[in-house]
View 1 (cartoon, rainbow, N blue to C red):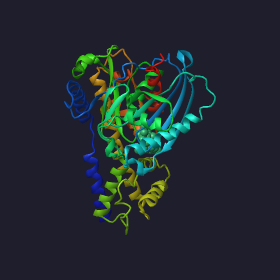
View 2: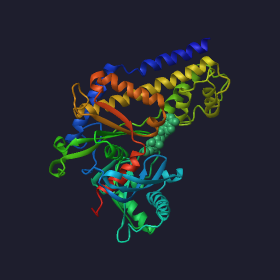
View 3: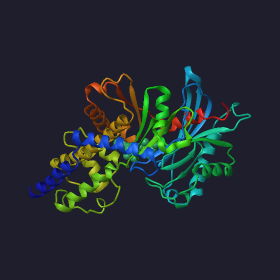
View 4: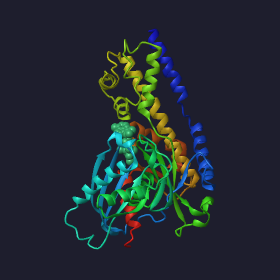
Length: 427
Ligand code: ADP
Ligand code: MG
């Protein structure tokens, strides 16, 4: 009983520390909007990196032809091929292949990583089949590269730093398009990178391709980040570079979400303070990132009366066996606390963007749709529902009628192909 009381104390403290009352989230949203504005004034003007996308030409549906995309940003990369058939028929064919990146390539050197990617792409192109489209044309590719990049044009950008599981020193400061282009040439692949984008920009493009009310693209996957449409006149740091369309897509980087890892740390803390997990060998529980977010969502949604799935996950991942039902309920509550905080902060971030562009206010006649891609939002039901409820809570019933969120499934990949089409040299 003393052990349970000690564990409960940890959970009570956690609940307090992770609390996100609406008033606090309103402050987060207001601060976000303010930081975003500051980040538009000058480079480094804000804690939020406001990166220019150089996409001033979103796909509008009229695009035609066969286009490729490469989506690199997590543990896998995807290659895509889409056949576009104009305003009425849109995407008539969509093929893709997912390739997992061998871990040693994530911390090796740049030419090895890009060589691996280019060879997979070359194999995918080889399966294109009979095709007359490219007789006198070079294939065109949209490259989704979801790491912080300082872009200098729609087809070039230097890597600022790696994030997530990547760390390849010799790529930092280099033009990632040039690296890919060189690797493709080595593979004998005659293909041109016609757009370099981020997954958030791809999601925004894919979302708005089907629904013109989409004004924000959000990624809630391995990392989290967003892009939105900004008036070029609201970007002092652009100075003489104003694009013709008067609009510029921006990207705002938010911190990553490591929900499984947070839950592991809480469980470890409990285990170090009391004995509710029995006589435990803590080796597993002390291993970073051993508990993954899909495990958290599986435990969170466990509907079995004796929380059998929680028991399985604890045993399989952490070697925690023989837990009481009371302990398993506590684990579910920890998942709930950690995930609710995450979803509510994500909602506050979205509200911050809406505040920045003056959308989602009472009486707003314009509809504002937020396109979201990423495994966290797509697969973690409790997360998704909490995000949506919190949006309504923060915007208010009335204003939230003009705001909608929707899943843009694989928007990051499809969007790259669409932007490549919109920036085709054969237009
Ligand atoms: P990436 O962000 O790497 O491009 P995804 O959009 O596919 O890739 O997102 C993968 C991430 O989504 C995983 O790292 C994990 O955090 C989360 N995820 C995937 N499946 C689930 C799930 N069933 N429940 C909760 N989170 C999940
Ligand atoms: Mg992705």
